[in-house]
Length: 154
Figure (cartoon, rainbow, N blue to C red):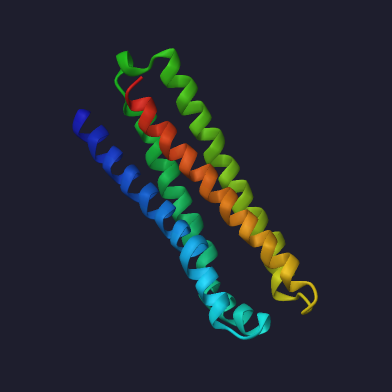
C-alpha cells in the first residue's frame, strides 16, 4: 500500500506541476508576447483560437487525472496521518480544485464562445476577462498545490 501511495503521489505531483506550469507559461509568457507580436486584436484572436482548438478536452482530462490521483491519495493515506489538520487542508484543497474546475468550465463554455463571436469593439474587454480568468486559475491551482504540500507535513 505504501508503494501504491508513493506512485500516486508522484503521478499527482508531476501532473499538478505540469498543469500549473503550462498555465503559468500561457498566462505570463505566451499570451502577452503573442499579443505584442500581432498588429491587430483580430490577428491575435485568430492565433489564440488556433492554439485553443481542441484543448478543452485535454485540459479536462488533466483535471480528471489530477482529481483521481488526489482522491486515491486520500484513500491510500495511512490512518495515523489523517489528523484533523490534514483533513481540513485536504478539504480546502478539494474546494480549490473544484473552484478551478468551475472557473475553467465557465471560461470554456461561456466566455470562449463570446470571444469567438466578439466584435472588434468587444475584444479588449473580453481579453481582460480572460487574463483575469487565467490569473484566477493560477491562484486557485497554486494554492491547492501548496495546501497539498503543507498537508504532508501536518
